[in-house]
Length: 273
Length: 302
Picture 1 (cartoon, chains in turn red, cyan):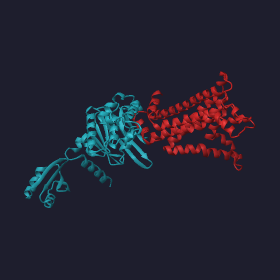
Picture 2 (cartoon, each protein chain N blue to C red; picture 1 turned 90 degrees about the vertical axis):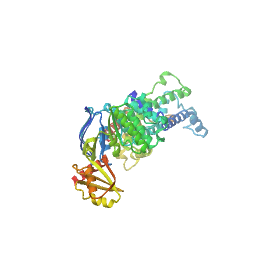
Picture 3 (spheres, rainbow over the protein chains, first blue to last red; picture 1 turned 120 degrees about the horizontal axis):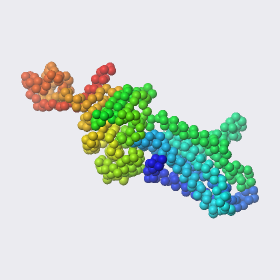
Picture 4 (cartoon, rainbow over the protein chains, first blue to last red; picture 1 turned 135 degrees about the vertical axis):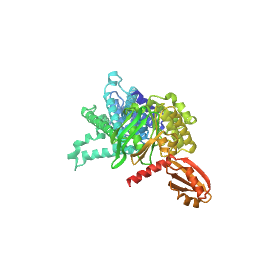
């Protein structure tokens, strides 16, 4: 495993686009995740009020709520890491280096493993980063600082890891299937942000079809990922939210994860490279 | 001689097209084996299969007497079709990755770069290289782990005459070290100058295989010229042991039956009152042999 990661590191460490995307991901997250209180002050200044509540007193960063708030926001950024995966994998195909790696003495499966290790490390790094960011902003803003609160509800971080890893596996599959970076990126982007969300809206609310297909919506690949960590913010206007990770949602995601990896295996197994 | 590679009844179909058709070949240790054939004859497909990047349809191949594996590939230095490197990495960084994959050769990176004359450019990104430099880096990569076997697919593609001569020198030097080399090329001159054995493929089928020496023995070409070429052509056509005749510019090149030689021809011409201005005996080139082989196979099929 170490050797395959070393090889991957040699490929990426001098690749500018990799560092630009990594930088965008982390800087973007720092900017957004650290600005919660300033955003609330901005909203207050603009005259917003949430059922008569002053926005600046909302405990966005209180332990343990901070974990769900942070991981929920961070899921929007996973698409940037997906671009890294798409570029890294499709490059190997268009440069013919995947073929040359195999000729030089990697097995096809070692090559695949090196990419799976890469997405494991990226998912792990992203999760660790959210943990640190949550810890720091929490220590700054949280009204109660107490070890048992800080370390409760960390399952949101585990769910975040699963979500990112599954999403990157989805991208890995598309990259191996479609081979062209631009195509993969546009498809991932459009499908994740437009096609499936609107398909879901139709399945749930279109009066002509909703009675027949609404049950299917939670099983769609992106919807299943989004269901892992529910939107937390309505709790600040005293609405009921799902503030836990449901086993059923985890199961659906794990089934998708299995489907992605099995398809990748099948695809590579029968293909000339 | 131990067998390095043996290919047995190998078949590869792309849909209805047969790219490789029941191909059998044996490559012995220490030989420099040329795989010849026109474009699209299945050379690269065959090499792709034995290097495990293309899936065979049927048949079998053994490396070092065993079924191929990632470990057998580590003992082979190979380039297939075009050089494949990471364009944003330098020559040295690219070779570093290969050494990691092969688990061998990190200490030889500078040596092989010297060997192909790229040491001065070792820190420049691959994408800034000319085609010839890319080819040379590919050769360097194949030599990196000091492997006992080299597979070079069109290694002189895109090189200028000087570059071709340099690559030839490297190949001969490596062959002298006792390494086994499998060289696919359509530049026959190359193969003739470096190979010990060769096989000819056509539409995926092997139509000839043997040693270069045997193939070139016997068949000799005689070149003649005289002041009046018209008269010479007409007279030579009367010479009975004449097998074939090619008119070139200011020159006739002809082949005779085995029983006759240049002496007989010259005697005949003197008797007819023709004085030659040029008479030379040439060993046939592989090119002629190759074209003959292809032509014979055409005749057989039509």
